[in-house]
Image (cartoon, rainbow, N blue to C red; front, side):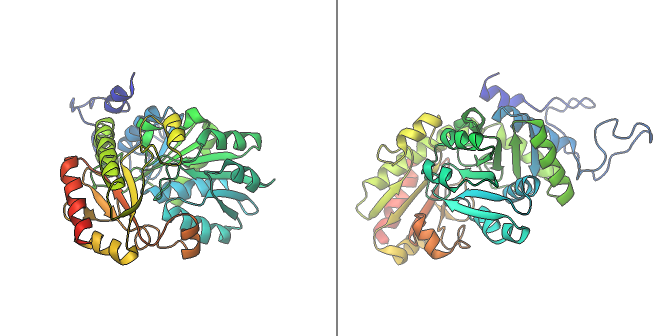
Length: 383
């Protein structure tokens, strides 16, 4: 089946009892067993270990990513933490891209050291830097492409080759482009992480995360970490995300087209210092992005001339665009990463990675592009 068919039909079947076309919300803590000898005969016992509604979403995402299996979580960070807990132990070393979601950076920087894990942050867009950072005890390389919030692009296939040559697991965050635009398993990745809160949900309705793997051994380790730490997705969240995922491709196409229009407008504005959007021909990794992805996504970042104060005036006074931390929703959002999503990253490291004090991040929604551009133009004029 094609992607659009899978996103509608995979993982879900009409309810056998009533014929309901939507997967029921199995809002139950426990599941009655017919006898001791047939324990787990129907596949479920307690919702921390597994739930039918959550399982339907896991099966859908597995099909969309082309993986072996999926585990779903209470948030994107819970998904990332489960991967770290499952695959690392004291004495291990990992390599992490210098630009990743702020929560990922915070956990790797401040918590993994408590567990005896050594962490090296590198510019993953420089493939040689990843190779040079790899040690004998390196167990995992964590990338994110395009990166949050600078939209720096990593050569996923090249990093995967380095990992395979060194017996290292390659984990990548595919939240920004989703399986509709980017296919990490086809580029050699071992584990894919998602914040399902973002584009998979698409409606600012849930917090959730997922980990998709390409072999059963990894699935067993990560699923064990999830049940042990209790990092589970709720049935209601799974049900809502199932509905959002059914329109993923339509939303991604429309939001990506809007993002291109917004980026092209900003690129010509006299009050904008620079714009980053992989779809622009002058983006440093435009050719790489075009090669490894089928679309450029709905995220745009830029810096307004006049520095931080001008940027704050822009964000505090803009209409139509909502000042908020999330991304990937049908509503267009504007974010100041330094004070919001990446506040935990030390300033010197932020600046070195391109997360400047005046950086503005846009998550472009489904509104008319002309209205979004007019609102930006008016706000830039006042700023």
